[in-house]
Image (cartoon, rainbow, N blue to C red):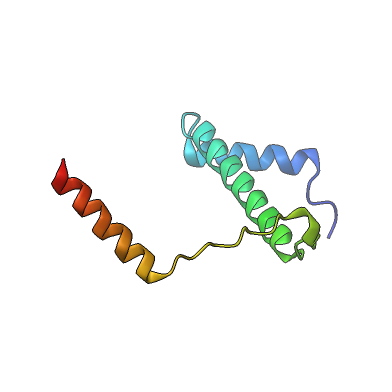
Length: 90
């Protein structure tokens, strides 16, 4: 089992491809093959990057959320009633 990719073998494969597909179809096949290889390479790269655990982030880098000010329900109801009275007077 000698060298498979010698210049003689490559020329033979190109001649057979020309006979089978014709000179007009070969550039399209080459583009499709190149695009397929690029997509495969990108897919493998994404899978490898997904396996890496995310770097831990320091808690000091995130600001603490502000506390929510809650008003008592009675105040909200009274404010709504005051708004309605002001609207009636206008």
